[in-house]
Length: 305
Image 1 (cartoon, rainbow, N blue to C red):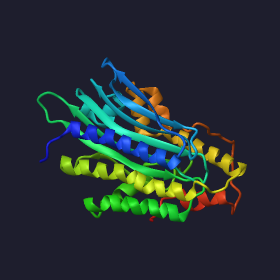
Image 2 (tube, rainbow, N blue to C red; image 1 turned 30 degrees about the vertical axis):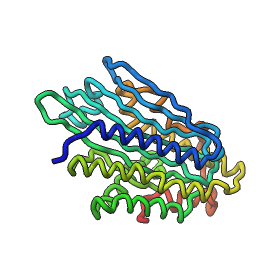
Image 3 (tube, rainbow, N blue to C red; image 1 turned 45 degrees about the vertical axis):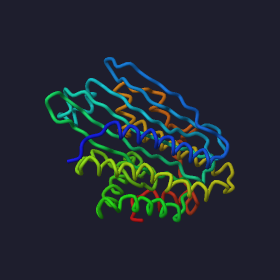
């Protein structure tokens, strides 16, 4: 069995943050990421640190963030031990890269990606560890070509790790990024996985490397294809309305957001994923046969690509 190497994971994650930021800055061509490095001394709640990087008012991206964090805690929050009682009484470390990009142009989808590692240890006992992550796409005016390409890259990422991996993690993504109160998926899905430790450590680590690097391979060609598409106020207003769904999911259902807030994490970094502007409208209905209706009718439902 391959040995657990926390330092190698941390170095990869920091390098991944650098690489993704560089690639997204190149695509934008105007804005750059501003870094907010932070550190907390360990106390009753979370200690550790990270690098929060935020881009604002770009030529392509209205706002986005690419975060690295490495935190430690003396004990898990009660919400976590209720689901995983074996974690009680263990100190833990969690590290990861998480990002969300909110474009200006409604024809460019919002995207999210995350790769993370968790380990809980107790003297005299074997550590409990796992990896998690994935990437997903949230279009406002979707294109079949883009959604198909996104999933084709996801399939390529998964292929070396087993024939069943894409199907399992694609289905998990569809199930996870689902708003039950709206009866719709957040977007067109992608990959999502958690508690990944059924392989040896090195193979699990290789998988999150592939997922982390696959994000820009999947997203950047879509951005390049759509970023110069003309749009007006109708498209902008619909984009802002649909961003409200993003907020609803992240604040009500997202496990990472809830864990971070409940464990005393750094609020500004946790809520970096929120869009800069969003809107809600009472009892909004799309016009039948409209471009907006196409999103609801054909794309916000799990399907095979």
